[in-house]
Image (cartoon, rainbow, N blue to C red; front, side, top):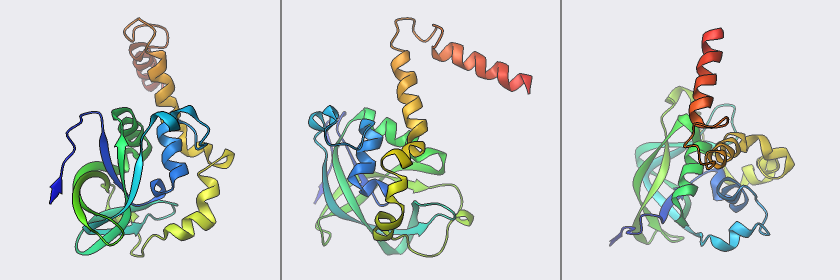
Length: 197
């Protein structure tokens, strides 16, 4: 049985790396990993164990995070998250960056892979040469690397997301992006900087 999402502002996703950690997911979506953040109460995110068939997870060379690629005989264990908003997906796209593309997949939801559901996930597109053959280990990430992703030590990981959110807020200034901090002015300034180099 396949279930599809009919609410245009409610999204589902399959996460298989750092975003399996609730504190990382909430930091991206809400700007804070603290449960006292008021956005926690307004979001109804649910997380369920899930399996993604016909994909394989790899370590990314010199990085704390993994990547997945299609693979006919492998399965990836991760989490199925429901209740994501369009704004959450926008932030997640920025967080994942240009190394990944968001794609629709079919996942098996439940600890042992029960019901099939549609979700979106981030597939690696930056070339297999940047990947290691070995499997990425979530437990090792939590033990050894999580501190670099959550709290003061991890703030640099979210700079692009925070800057995009701040720019989006500035554009709500009534000028349609034409004000001093609007996207048109910023694009012109960027072009001037490029031409000056």
